[in-house]
Image 1 (cartoon, one colour):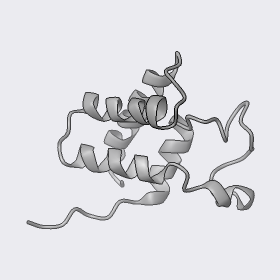
Image 2 (cartoon, helix red, strand yellow; image 1 turned 180 degrees about the horizontal axis):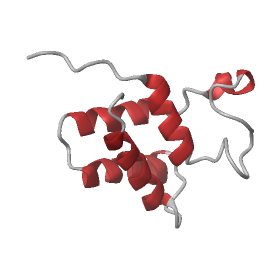
Image 3 (cartoon, rainbow, N blue to C red; image 1 turned 60 degrees about the horizontal axis):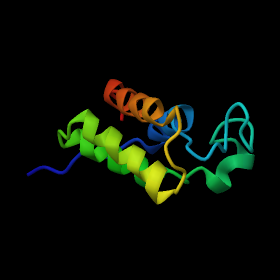
Image 4 (tube, rainbow, N blue to C red; image 1 turned 180 degrees about the vertical axis):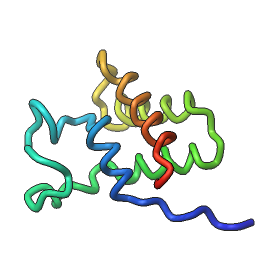
Length: 105
């Protein structure tokens, strides 16, 4: 069995911060401004890496996208204790779609 190719973390972070950011650190109305890789934001740039890496790995192994969406929703609603908002499912779906569409991850 050959090992999975390495994930391009910077691309995965671009997707996660652009489409997910469940606690609202960046973006419009966020606590901070700019992009995850701005000098002022590097202290929390890895905040969601573990979850995004798991989602990308699941998709690479052929896990159905619906299951990966459910994983992200569970992380946000239960593990982070944020509950489910109107945007929770849409953001999870956007992350899954973006990962699947990015051939460089």
